[in-house]
View 1 (cartoon, rainbow, N blue to C red):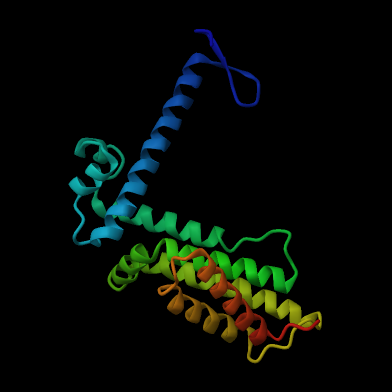
View 2: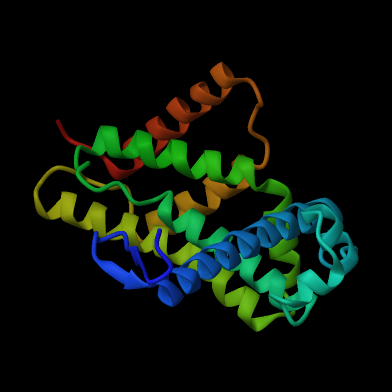
Length: 214
């Protein structure tokens, strides 16, 4: 890289100052990610009230001033942790290119259960904080509603195409399935084979309730 110009990701030359700014932005993003992940572990372990800024900094192996360079408060860090968790959950329910109800049902069930199993402790903290924090509650509700709404729309399309005969209104059914999965996801086995068995069982329940034909 010369002092005058650097090559960007697109292959075009860019001034050295622009390349330096890009590097700094990348470094800042990485550090912010480290802090968010450390905060998530600390909150999951000790709860919101039991976690201090010092504990987050220690978990991230940085100083308290380094924490304050990215977040103004513990709550701000917690909100970013919840936002990252929400994004993870919503991404886990995206299956572009899959339309077969059997294949989609199995993939969605596995993703839903795996996401809950991986984040069980943190989800408990989020549920507790959602009771008194409107921003946390809004993100928690989005994690619940968007997947349920997507399921309802999918079932409605299957019904319109003559491919399903659900036992109840698709919107009601989606809400029931979401609540059921959330309840039992807290007790999933650690053993991989046992987990896959649960995936098969929940998938069978889902397919039976939506009344897949063919």
